[in-house]
Length: 119
Image 1 (cartoon, rainbow, N blue to C red):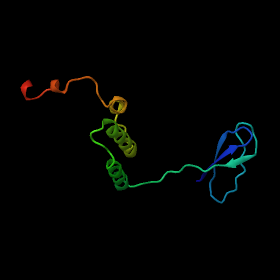
Image 2 (cartoon, rainbow, N blue to C red; image 1 turned 120 degrees about the vertical axis):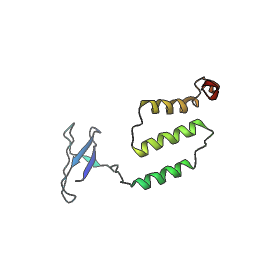
Image 3 (cartoon, helix red, strand yellow; image 1 turned 180 degrees about the horizontal axis):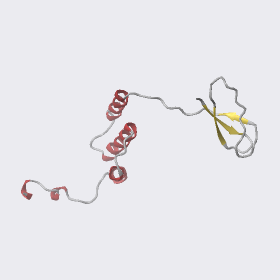
Image 4 (tube, rainbow, N blue to C red; image 1 turned 135 degrees about the vertical axis):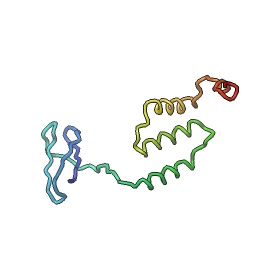
């Protein structure tokens, strides 16, 4: 079922029209002002990709990541999360926000992180 989008020339509202068939003629009317002077818009569309294609795309993106730059890594992590469509949780988003903002420096001393001497 095609969905067509129109913009009313009278009031500027974007209107959506759902049809049953591509061959069906449409006479759109503005939902806001009732006007019939609407211009058809180019709609966005989604392209279904296989999981392999998505991972290939992520690999291509990773080639430009500077692993010594926390902001670069954060940008890649954010795009990876969007590409995979998984919700990694609020903690993940906060961590990425911190990396993008200030490189992840939270003032802690890594030498206090624990190690063999803490046993």
